[in-house]
Length: 467
Image (cartoon, rainbow, N blue to C red; front, side, top):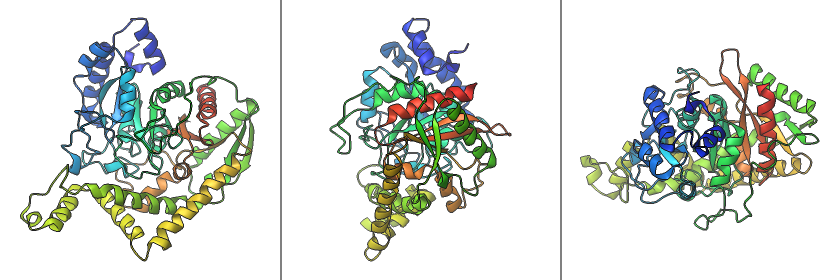
């Protein structure tokens, strides 16, 4: 079997037994990336990965292009950072370095992680390996496509409102959004700081647990990092779901969900019940407000975070005559030329929401409803171990189908947004295919820091749906 067709556990076993070298593995993936470059999964490919493999002797990984690797470009798939070279490593990169990981390259994404389809990237759309006429999801679409197409053994993504789980579902891989603060955000280019979370994107659930082991942990450089005892997330992953209580939130089975998606999730529920899990319908009554709440809070934080891209300190600066008139003109021209339409739209929404006279009416109210959404989860998790929902309402849609309709695009994340607003962990697991052979993902959600149970249920779902 070709080495790139193996999962991370199998690859590590061969590496440990010296049946294959790290540089051989890296070369096999680089060759695959070259052959399949039409997928456009990568913004930059590190040809020195083979040499790094000889030196480090570790496993290869792809990194979403909003995380800093010292000496490498970090573009966030935006013109404004097209030539920016990172001066330091993100904390997750420092952790990967300690385990001798080899970096294959930086993956494509929606510009500044703002999008659900990877169509807002300055470097062009990533294609879904299962059907190249369709989107891979977003914003971590490049990472998802790379793993799904065997262009990466595994990858890191970031999730602000579903940006790991949604593309994982649409590309047929495993994607985990950890508890907020479990993985350091230091060195991740900020979109919405109270929502952003780095997480693993992998071929299998056990691979996911292994990668989470490496990247999690307290970081004094991140003020939101949780100072808790480290645990092994592979421990107990194969335990039965016997006796676990799993809720099916009725608000996630709404009008508009594709019948094939709903049927597949109910099939998962039935199989879990046959294994001894208790499946019951539950309610998260404030779910309907998740989309409007998210699209006030996230753009507001983006408006603040992206104000640093002004053409003065780093990144692109407009050189047209108009930009040379005065400072305001330089700011205006730099941003209008450097930011794409979706980023501009969200900055404007966020600036409006934070402006005098509208702060109380929009931003403050959204934060209050966010608290109600979190309380819904807290109440449900007093009785249930986890929740089972669809990850997305439909399978992957066609490129260009929703790009000119922001509201329809935003609804692609309707089932994932609440998880970020509440700060709880969520994972998407592939559970089969539609009639037209497009992947379908099931989402599992649990309470804060309950990744062990989440991964255990996810592993059982994975095994049951493989039968």
